[in-house]
Image 1: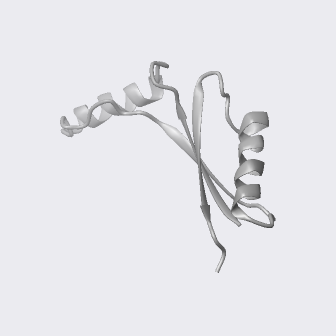
Image 2: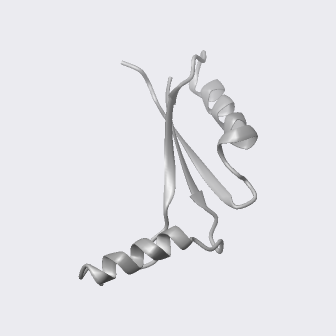
Image 3: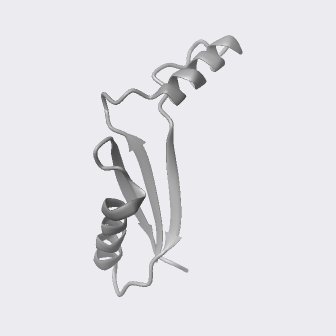
Length: 82
C-alpha cells in the first residue's frame, strides 16, 4: 500500500524557516503570501493486508521515529497500488 505522511509543526510552534521564506517571498514582490509554514513529506510502501493495518503501521512509525510528536503533527494518506 502506498503511504504518504505529511508532517508539520503544531499550531503555536515557532517556524523560523517559514518566517524566512515569507520574508524572502515579500522581498521578491510576493507580498500576498502570509503565515508560511514549512513541513515535510515522506512517501513509502507498506506491505499490509488492508488499509486499516497500513494506517496503524504508519502511525506507529510516526510516533516512533518519523515525527517529533511534541512539536509536530502528522497526517497519513493511503493509496491503493494499481
